[in-house]
Image (cartoon, rainbow, N blue to C red; front, side, top):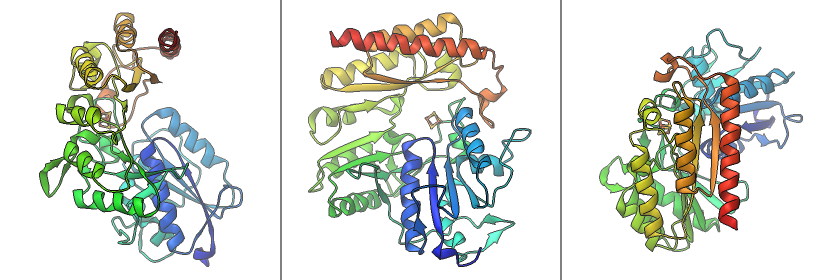
Length: 373
Ligand code: SF4
């Protein structure tokens, strides 16, 4: 690549809010290195695909998008890059040509590597060359919210989930760094913050375990200029009364809670290694609603997990009815490499998964419409 720094870079992002946050930080890092950020792939010289690996469908989309790129430098970044590097796509279609791979842990080194300022290892970047000037927060697309990553990775090893394998186990950010990021956000004229992590409510500062998630929320709410604090995603098992009390009693803490359920069947929850039963989940939702009647609850559901019978699925539908979520995100189960569930027989046929997903959404629509009347 000649005259790299004058080149235009387009960053295409897939998947979760965490990836959008990472892409925002990445764009800032690229700008600091003199690259110009392009708003379209067509006019860019370099395209960075910041990818998600949580569902197979998302991966297929990435490789089909990459396959259409001609005559540009192609960079595969994020979870899918880890999967390719670790050999998780053996026998599966990848892209015809990839110029660079960067795992999530290596994202900070992309600007340096593309600018030619750091070495490469067989075409792969040297990991960990973190730019000390990197911003630790990002503006969301609406520019009204500053996102702060409070931890990276997850050590829960839910049996279906690839995250611990591609992002590593949980690495919390130092409490002081998060507080500094929040102060910087306020200085930028932004008053709302969104805390990001794969499992936000298991947060403990690495230098002081006493500084846990409730302590963090409370401390952030005391920063002058901060008006709203949201967070995604908490784990039902790690929700405690201190956090519930803060949601109920502190006007700055968001009352929209995304609480991933995944299934209403205890057999499936156990096989998923979620660490709670349907009864635990219902009890938590009741505690939240009792403490804070105007709370809104949303959730994630996976249909067609190995071994899920019609009876198990009906338990999920009943739980939907019982809780009355304000919104849900439903997904068909897909086998993820490296995971424990990849050794289970994927025994729910695709047609059945599709049918269940449709029934799930119909049920949810019915519940929402009923609650509107
Ligand atoms: S809590 Fe489970 S599903 Fe969520 S990121 Fe961690 S391992 Fe994956």
